[in-house]
Image 1 (cartoon, one colour):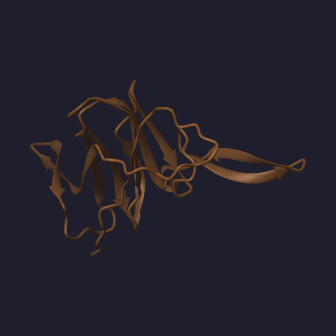
Image 2 (cartoon, rainbow, N blue to C red; image 1 turned 60 degrees about the horizontal axis):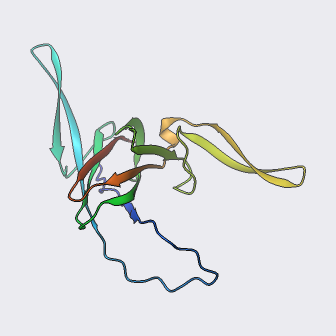
Image 3 (cartoon, helix red, strand yellow; image 1 turned 180 degrees about the vertical axis):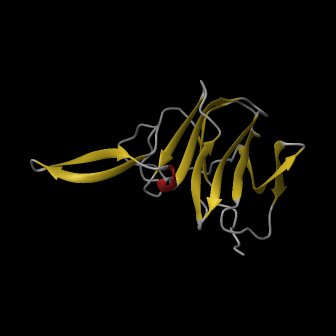
Length: 174
């Protein structure tokens, strides 16, 4: 049996406003206006009366190779005003591979993928490498498999006061 821990979250609320300055100013204390709640669920599949059914088991204590897990986070704006943008980045838990299933992008939510530990994100999974051509460094992109995805990221625009946005993706235990 394998124990897979809930993935670490990289979450930021991005605010807009005048930020230009010749000298970087010390970072002011920022009140966090976003509440994040993360859960991990085990997908149990059964056939009942000839129909395939899925049951989600919250916070599984053990998993085995081949099990599918749902990594989920709810994002709530607990501030007093709308937020122009909230970015949620979730890495794949150790010992798992991305299945390709994630909360989809929408008109105001952009979904992107990273195959390099969260340094670069693209709209479809792509391997990005740096090469030198004619004395210049250029980035080359090539299609990547879902198993190569290391992080998923959602950028949510215009999060209303008290709004809750639920996001998730699925991984398979290696």
